Amino acid sequence: MDNRRVIVALDFPSADEALACAARLDPRLCRVKVGKELFVATGPALIGKLQERGFEVFLDLKFHDIPNTVAGACKAAAALGVWMVNVHASGGEAMMRAARDAVASVTKPPLLIAVTILTSLDDDSLRQVGFADGVRGRVEGLSRLARECGLDGVVCSAQEAPWVRASAGTTFTLVTPGIRLEGDAKADQARVVTPPEALRLGADYLVIGRSVTRSEDPVATLEAIHRSLEEESRRK
Ligand SMILES: O=C(O)c1cc(=O)[nH]c(=O)n1[C@@H]1O[C@H](COP(=O)(O)O)[C@@H](O)[C@H]1O
Image (cartoon, rainbow, N blue to C red; front, top):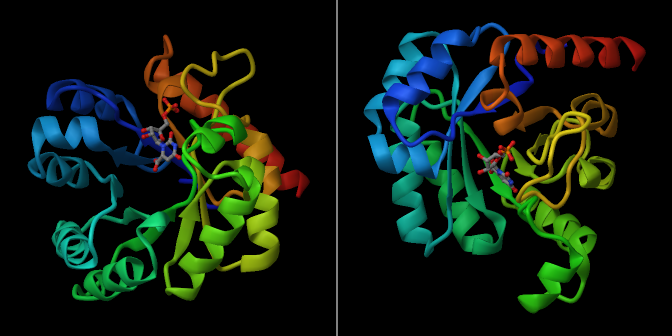
């Protein structure tokens, strides 16, 4: 099993807080994610600091714009040496193809992943924004399009992982946020799954934020998650 299936979301308002959290994490047991809050607050220099500490970084800025703009942003992200970068699949075919070509500009391109439907949305909230076909249909459709555009994988909830896996095959990377431990509050997430269940359903990587970073003992929590994943993969 890949020892670093867990991607810890460093959703903090400052570099100090993010680095303090990272200092307690073992880069052999996880990767880290820098998202909008931290990136806007600190800029790209923080990515270098995390890489110096041995972490592979998922730069989660969910680009969603016209193809030329997204291509430029993806090229800049790839130049930072990040391990993974993402765009919104709903940006469309031309945008995803432009993103794919742009990341290929570096010697070691990051994995390019398309966000399908945010894990904070459910069928009702999708209907409110005009999509009547529900989560499953849209995740399947956007995953298919992302694959046709040559992307490496998608972000979806682990709840949809079996359907995506069935059509996309084993080499397509499934990144699943919306992970909660037993008894955790859902908070703003709508489609949640526990870590072992996510693995059982076919997830490759589990994005976990508050359940680790806001726990009383993030190190112990991460180690417990790691053990539960090892047990699950032995069962597989
Ligand atoms: O692309 C993402 O990482 C992402 C996509 C998605 O559909 N849902 C989602 O929650 N995320 C990110 O995953 C993390 C989840 O954080 P927690 O809910 O605290 O575990 C956050 O940093 C979100 O920005």
